[in-house]
Image 1 (spheres, rainbow over the protein chains, first blue to last red):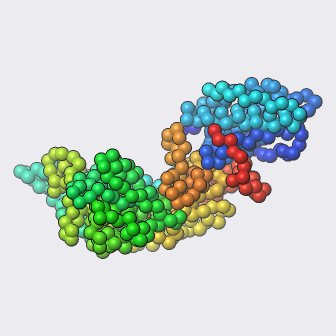
Image 2 (image 1 turned 45 degrees about the vertical axis):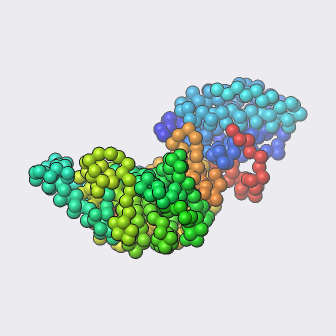
Image 3 (image 1 turned 180 degrees about the horizontal axis):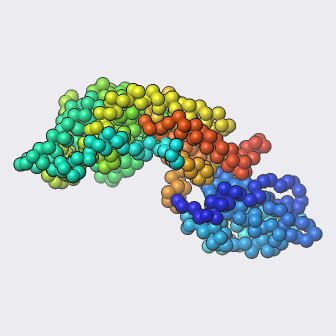
Length: 138
Length: 403
C-alpha cells in the first residue's frame, strides 16, 4: 500500500513519543485498542490545573504506520488546546490531514477514542463526571 | 548491493538467465505449436517439449510420460484433487488433508465438500509437523486420497512425506503432495517417496511464471485424473490446451540447473539462512516459527513480540519479505498457518518470513540483520505493549477495548 507523505513523515519522525507519570492528578491516560486487533494506542495529556490547557501530550502506539501517524498527529494537535477544545478533534480531521485511505480510517477512530479516554481519565481524577460515550464515528 | 533486498523467494524467484536464454528462441523463431504434426515448426516445438519433460522428470525421479504440464501449482492442485475425486468417485468420497496446506488445496477441498466430499483436516503439532499415526488413524475404507504438502510455504516445515506416503500405499490410498516449495530445493524422488501425484511449479525454482506440472504415476498403481478442462486432449487427455512451449523449455532448463546445482546452492544458502536466523533470534522476545530441524534450507519465519507486523514491514521497506499478516484487504487477518501452530494473533501478526535464493549474498544478509534489528528496537521504543511487558504487566490480564 502506498502511504501518504505525511504518514511517512510522522512514522519516520514521530512527535512526542514517550510516557508521562500516570499517577499524577494532572495527567490523563487513554489506552485503547487490543493487541489481537493489531492496534494499541496509549495517549497521555498533562493539563495545567490553573488554566485547563494541555501542556504536554505523549503517545506510544503498537500498530501500523497509519496508527503511529494518527497518534503522533493527535499529540501535536492536543498541545496548547484546552480540554474542551481537545474534545472537538474529530477523527475525520485526522483522516483528511494524513490522507488516510478507507481501510485505515479505523486508525483515526482509535486516535479519537484515545483522546477521549485520556480526557475522561483526567476528568475522573479531578472529581468530574466522565464525558458520555456519544459515538458517532464517520 | 541493490535495494530493496529480495528475500521473498517463497513467493517467487528470479528467472535464471540460463533458463531465459533457453526460452527466447521459442518465442520468435521456433514458435510452432507442439501439437502441429505436419511441419517442422511443430516438430521442433514438440522436440523441445519432450526434452524439457525429460529434464523435469529426471529432477523428481519420474518417467517423462508422467509429467502433465499445467499453468502452475494452483492448477495442478485443482486437477489432482478434483480429478481424483471424479475419477475415483465409486471407491469413496473421503479425502484427508491438513489445516496448514496452501489455499489452493484448502479452497479446492471446500469446493469438493459442496460436491459431496468428506474432508478430514489434520492439525499439526506446535512445530508444524504431522505424524504418520495421525494420517493412519484418519484413513477410512472410503478414503480415496491423502494430500499433504511437502514443505510449507510460510514456515518451511517439511512433513515426513516418505513415511506418510508409505502408510497410504499400504492401505491402498492414493497420496498427493503439493511440493511447490520443495521441488528444486531439496531432493524429491517420487519413487522412493511413494508419491502418486505431485504438484510443482517453475517460478519457485528460478524458472518462468505460468508453467507448472502435475506428476501422475503410471505404474504401481496406474493413476488417472479426470480432466477439468475440455479441449484437444493434450497431455494424455488430462489437461487440454496448447502447450506453453517457451515456458516449458524454461521450466526444463531450471529443473536441470536445480538438479546439478542443488547441493552447492543449498550449502551456501543454509549457511546464510542460519546466520540470519541466529542473529535475529538474539533479539529479545523473538521466536522461530515451526520446526527448526525439519525445514526447507532457504526459509525462516520469525515473530517479534510487541511489534506490529504492518508497522514492521514499513520500517524495513528496503527488504522485500512477507509478513504473517494478510493486510492486503480491509481486514487484518493473521496467518492461518501460524495460528494453527497455536500462536496468538499478535505473534502471528508480528512475524516475518525470509526466503533466500541462489542469488542472495552475504552482504544482503548483513544488511537485513541490521535493518530488522534496528526496526524492531525502534518500534518497541514506541510500543506501549513493550513498555508494559518491561514493567512486568501480564498483557493477558489487561482489559482491552475491542474496536
